Image (cartoon, rainbow, N blue to C red; front, top):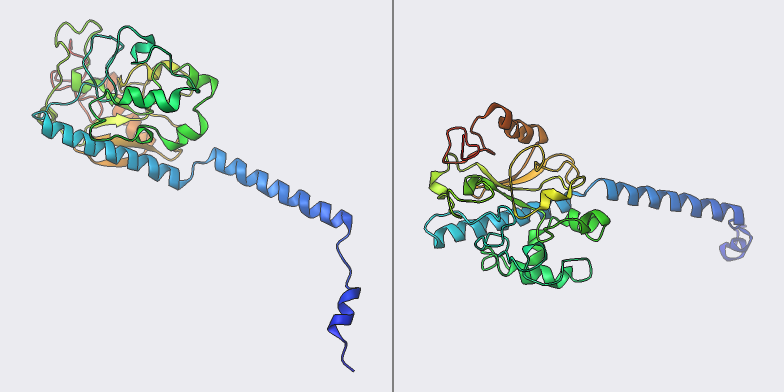
Length: 273
């Protein structure tokens, strides 16, 4: 005689309270481990989005060069309020941090005020989306933190190589805001933009330009496996930390390379060498 499934199902033992609590506890632990993993190891999607940002900056640079007789944009070198409009913004000597608004950029006004400032930069006419200037990993994990509040420049997580302006002295007397032509740069693979390591020193985001030295070099905190870089010729790729450091260390050997490429000096370094 066959058992009636409907009848027998009433007598199947259910989960006990202890068993349910054990399942819930295990699930909570697994969720916590997953969230921790996502927080400490940026996903490939984030890295790809950052790389896409830099590719768009490469297109903006190419269009700017076409419209400006091959001259590179001002790299927003230093904080002199009399400087011309740079790739990122136009300095204003009468406001905090030389930005356009009378109010310092903080977490409350950042979404709107950063766009007001970006609109004054020469890239904005070609690249008019504020989020493109920010690495998505940085935006998700750093914006709004106490360290981020200390950054003078909150407009972009990327910096431009000061080689395009010959690494000018603070008073800029020799070149008077001039920049080189792209055709003067010895190799189209020379690096023009990267992401510095602002995890310890907020001054690396002083303006929009930087030396490719040990202070303002690439961040090892964002992409773990390497760093996204943009070349003068528009190529964009993830570069290994070892390759970037090797190029950066020519600061010690005074050799021209893909990071130190000032066209006006044999070594590619500062204008007085």
